[in-house]
Image 1 (cartoon, rainbow, N blue to C red):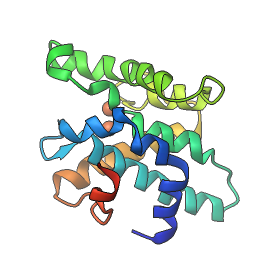
Image 2 (cartoon, rainbow, N blue to C red; image 1 turned 45 degrees about the vertical axis):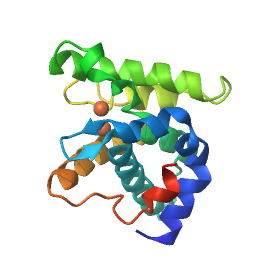
Image 3 (cartoon, rainbow, N blue to C red; image 1 turned 135 degrees about the vertical axis):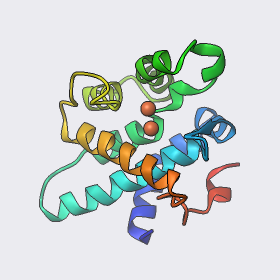
Length: 167
Ligand SMILES: [Fe+2]
Ligand SMILES: [Fe+2]
């Protein structure tokens, strides 16, 4: 992982990384081989690599909104075995539950339509409506890429010092 991407992650996501909500996500397994937090870090890292490429093409990206959305897109899944009766219910409901968590974590003034739409639509095409913003397209793409890489045993966040992120 490049130092630039790592510095972007800490610059735009440090408050989320240090939050109790994110820290608790190190305690729940996800995609059978990861934790929710490790998966979310992988998704954020891929999103930030995409940002660097788009910035070189002079395409502007709301990096803070994208980083919040990437790090928190699955936080609603915490406690899934108690909350949801089936995987189908989990697929359908966790984006809205993640939005509830985000609203409790960041200032009202900072919460915006990019975060909301990107997290709400991140399961697309399992949800019929695609993301409205390019940050959302980046998130849903990074989510799939990260999930495949994790299953192959090659997490995008593998070079991150997780002891520096998790307390
Ligand atoms: Fe998800
Ligand atoms: Fe995800």
